[in-house]
Image (cartoon, rainbow, N blue to C red):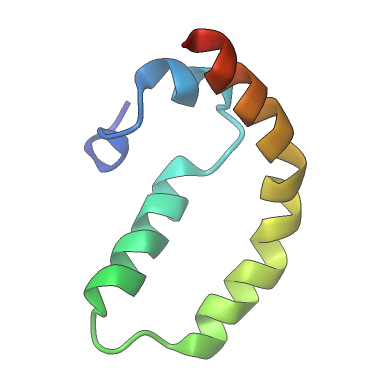
Length: 69
């Protein structure tokens, strides 16, 4: 696992390798830290393109996390 996803438990990253963890974390940093004022059009396009994939994974992800508790 790379340093960019160090706050995500390794077993979660391993269970969902097809999710682009680094890109999600990078987008979060970009938005939160407002590097050079985020381009809202780019953020919105990312939301439109990526949320459908994530939306399909959320129930599986939730079940996995709950089963690990």
